Length: 107
Length: 163
Image (cartoon, rainbow over all chains, first blue to last red; front, top):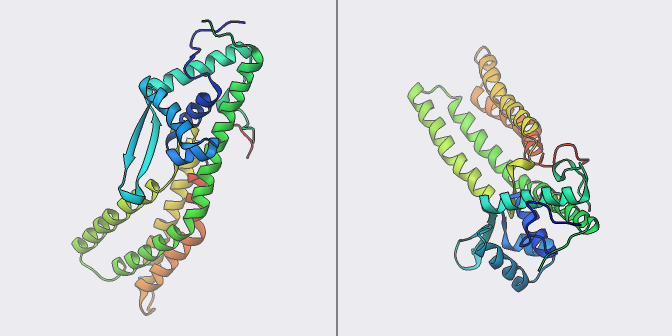
């Protein structure tokens, strides 16, 4: 039982992995979409995003004004590379050849 | 502190990744399905007006100006609509070849109908040929091209997965 190269301890915690996985499948996503999809509170998601932003894994962009104000989140290249490495490490641990890109999403 | 991850935990992590991909694909499909009807009819209206005007006997430079104006209006409008979306699937999630083929087929049908109907109507004595040309082109757009283009936009399921 080891942690192979590419395994990212910052991404691995369940909630953070869910956030990064969602963003990895997106060019960008709205804060509200991530929050609702993962059933998180505003503060819980903000905390995770802040941690990932500090690590340079994602960037937040605020758009619009007033009620139309929206926050978009996107993974940076660094974040995407870290995520790919982490997925490769998880696959190595599982010893599976199945790839997320070719697999069936669990509903 | 050394983090130890066993196969079960790693498997759960991979499941989470798969689930996220499915959630983004589902959301993208839902957004296109829910938002496309209004966009389809407003695009159809703009297309009808454009073809009706350009199908009239106009000078070449006027036609050119109209094409530029149509593009200058429709492209930012499309970009604005795409910005209303809550999530944009990553390019790696698209089935690129299928999407491109559907796009080209949809655009080709509209362009082909416009040119062919214009050519055929030019050889007849029918009244208001440009309005007939506009109506035919718009009908093809609404009932053939738009559904194809919507399918192209929603072909975001990772290749190899079941729909």
